[in-house]
Length: 334
Ligand code: FBP
Image (cartoon, rainbow, N blue to C red; front, side, top):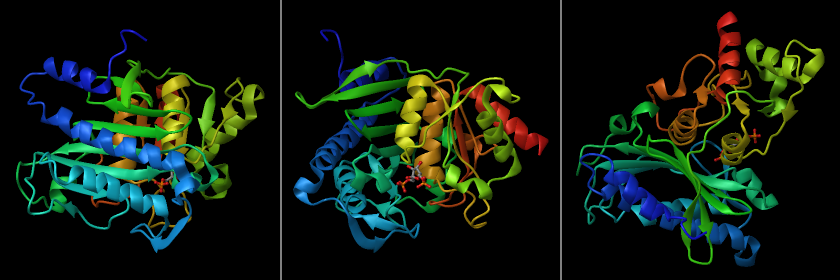
């Protein structure tokens, strides 16, 4: 344990190696860390403090919100709006851009977040998380929607926090992927998983198979071949997992490889997928690529998409590069 470093020390040392860095970014990340520590505490206490269950209200996605969806959103907003590092925010739980109150200075970054990912799991005590994406912005302005609609490839930083058996943060600033475990005794995230990388090959897939009848032919073909195992064209057996928490699926893939699909399906043509581009697909896509994996819609690289709206949904296929490329190839073949 002796030489393990804290997240703050890691960031400061990483920033020292980068030209022209002011340190504001490290302060912004520390604000996000403080918010996630508060959320970790609340999630852990659950029914002891009455924060489980539904809030009887709907978000812009038309989903019934959990009490913790709203509470965690407020924690993120209140931890970030006064600091002077941001010009604006966007959240899965809020329809429009979240403006910085006029009494506070505005900074040179934008923060986009899913305050409680996997919220359908919160009442059944399974892993949930917070996902965030940081973009650059002209300093001191009131940002417009156009300022937010930047490609995922332009992200400055992306991360997620897992509230599971242990609380972990996974982070990239475009220089690889590192994992940190929250030491509850000292209240600090400690670097425990340096330079996380995803094996190119895998024998594990994750998809909600109950939607199979709605999938397109390329995904039907891919999953069918996996299920046929060593008797089939792949000549090897595959295992399946589905946690229904994107953060948990991505962390498993960062740890032991695998491929995750929430593909396009025919249920509702106005929704070309379930996951949201700006605060789910883009941040996990950046992390996956920085760890040597790939992230696609099946037709195009997620990080190349020019966003059209704040809560835009996209099909997501991510993980071990060889499998993602095989699925993309099946789409090309039609
Ligand atoms: P939210 O919980 O933030 O709405 O995220 C969506 C999500 O829960 C992902 O975390 C997960 O991968 C997926 O939806 C699960 O979908 P389904 O309920 O269809 O299995």
